[in-house]
Image 1 (cartoon, rainbow, N blue to C red):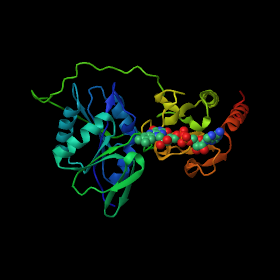
Image 2 (image 1 turned 90 degrees about the vertical axis):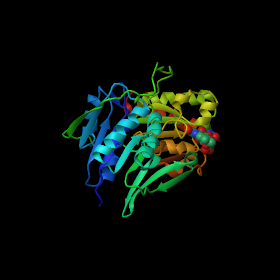
Image 3 (image 1 turned 135 degrees about the horizontal axis):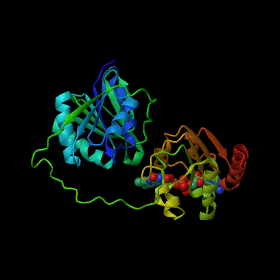
Image 4 (image 1 turned 180 degrees about the vertical axis):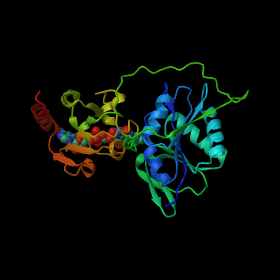
Length: 323
Ligand SMILES: Cc1cc2nc3c(=O)[nH]c(=O)nc-3n(C[C@H](O)[C@H](O)[C@H](O)COP(=O)(O)OP(=O)(O)OC[C@H]3O[C@@H](n4cnc5c(N)ncnc54)[C@H](O)[C@@H]3O)c2cc1C
């Protein structure tokens, strides 16, 4: 097996690593073989992110303290780090900032770049990166032939590895900004006030699709979610019908989720929905059509009327939980 040195750029927000940050360390370890995995964190208050990176598998963390890091700065800093340490692969989260950073960095260092990777395969010829195209309808396998490879990793596509001892070294790098380095000035940041629905971190999700029939019936999904301590998900037609807010949408144009248990009522299983929930550990689907595509990915499929099955489900879960 080829040993490779892998850089994982971990973006932070308010001093904490973004969700995809530690998730990247598992594929990074796979890609590295016996090589070294080094997290790079550009944040003056990066203690939490650095420790988390070591816990989830980084051999070392480079902390580049820097006052402000708009994407053009990040590119400059990562370019300097890449030139100094010579990694074979640089992984970046597929966040809005990451998507801006990766191609610029690749152009600067003459690397090939693949974006939005959701799987990888180590072959004798090199690493094959899988990335969805045309809204997830097609999966493309891509190899990069340049010496250095830059890839962005989709949030939720990989799970964090086992937590271990944070025994790796922390390498502080001082970044000296020259006049003119910072061309973007962030004047203000505005946080969108929206309903907080944390689907990405939910352990159980109960999703209702258009097959629930009416808004009133869809609301009963919340009842089961309350019994199970779950978060409510929805398909796009449900959002378009106004039965719930966009914050609940699971899928290609919604959220990518990876709970332990995903229960779908009246969901057809269109590719654009499956793309968002295929990372779930265990999938239960209820649909009246035995040929519905959702059954192709379900661990348990119940062919029946969701409106009749849901109350029985709620009742049985209440009994099991003793509530
Ligand atoms: C660019 C693009 C992006 C998209 N992004 C997303 C996305 O992020 N998320 C998403 O979900 N969709 C997305 N879509 C839409 C997607 O293609 C599907 O149209 C959508 O997922 C279907 O939602 P649904 O299964 O709720 O509805 P339907 O396709 O209408 O399916 C309803 C299902 O319920 C079943 N059913 C009906 N009545 C009952 C009953 N009484 N009991 C049990 N089962 C019943 C039916 O058999 C059927 O399988 C996207 C589409 C495009 C083009």
